[in-house]
Length: 421
Image (cartoon, rainbow, N blue to C red; front, side):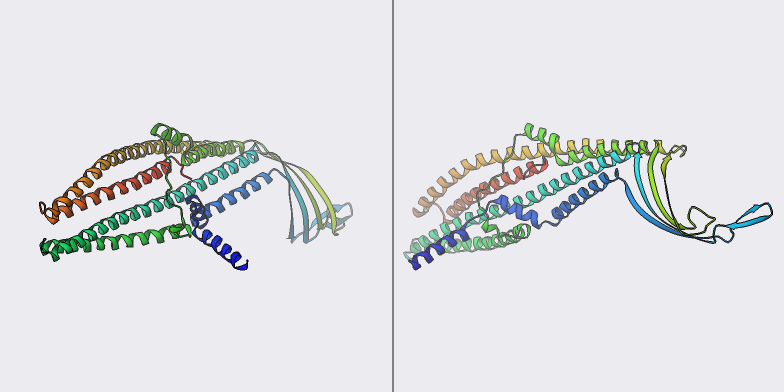
């Protein structure tokens, strides 16, 4: 019973070790490792605190202060027949104050709105970083499988060449073929082994790159992942509607408009109430020249009357900034439209070429089989048969390459439209 239990645990543990994780999990791990993304998350949290700080400006504030003042002369009050010195040369004052904004021309309200917009911009920037990191990880994933497919194709070719070599060696022992056929085949095998070694280096490099991005080895990730992409019209509409960069630009326009409201608010009356509790020497009564408490409170009123047209200059500067963002937005849409058209054209070309390659692979297979038979009948040379094998391998390798190129194009399409998570 104990042995059975141990075997069961061992089997379950083996299943856990062999289990593959989805690519989406790898992307999530990559986000945890990405410095730019994590810094952007911290920036987002910082903006949340700034928003809270802006919200608190509408509430009263409490503080304290103290002062010391030396007067070389004291006030002298004269009465008929006598005079009196009042006040003190050494004056002390400590106070506890409270201030409460009453009317700020909506400056406080608009400051809160600005902090809201800045938080939204930070959140959008976080999404942009997320999309970029996901695209890098997916690209590494597809590049790795592209290299694997190339290697599998070469391995298949080498196996075919080795089978052919064994057949030639048998023929050579029976003096049915020339030694040059033997040497040619061995040479081709060695050449392909060099290509396999070069591919192994590229595969290992991509594995290292993927592990750096995600913190896990790519062998642990499920194969067979495919990227989903939309048709051009829906992709371009989604790009214009919801791309994070366009959202950020729209938010910046609103931010500048709100800043303009703050500028205008600065030229409205600024009213605040205050209350102060003082403890000083002399106190409110200079005649006694003693420490004493006193309270004062009131309302403060401020209004700008003349600033040499500074308000107009500030508003004009903000208008220019808005126009620059509008120009940037229009240019970004044009660039996005161009990239999407290029990518969808590339996708169409790849899909068309894959259809052509299917036909070429079929023809190459028939040609290789035919030349294998003709070679055994000594109607074609060995090099002709080897060329047929290499042509078939080249077409299959190209098709596998185009499959991965198609996936990479889809990744690029989703990246351009601000999608792909």
